[in-house]
Length: 130
Image (cartoon, rainbow, N blue to C red):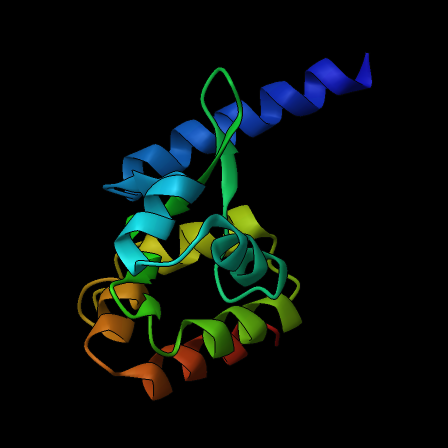
């Protein structure tokens, strides 16, 4: 009885994220974008340099495309993920926060990271734990 409920909740959260995250990559897609093998992407996920959530009917591990560049994980992402984890954010909550528009930035935290404004993003992330 518990497993279907958890799967249902995960699907609902995935639907919510789909409204925020414009593009997703599978592990093989992320490997292709970064020009690395699958093991490297799996290591990035294991070491929390990247995050993935399970989406869709087949529960495929999906990584927000904005997290991956031709050079690998987005610059400054790992430290930001650490700060959010310290604030006890789940992976779903972290992705939701990074892609939710914030008028005071302006844009989204992920846009600010892409623009090399990590200090402001991490300051806001640290404030979440208080």
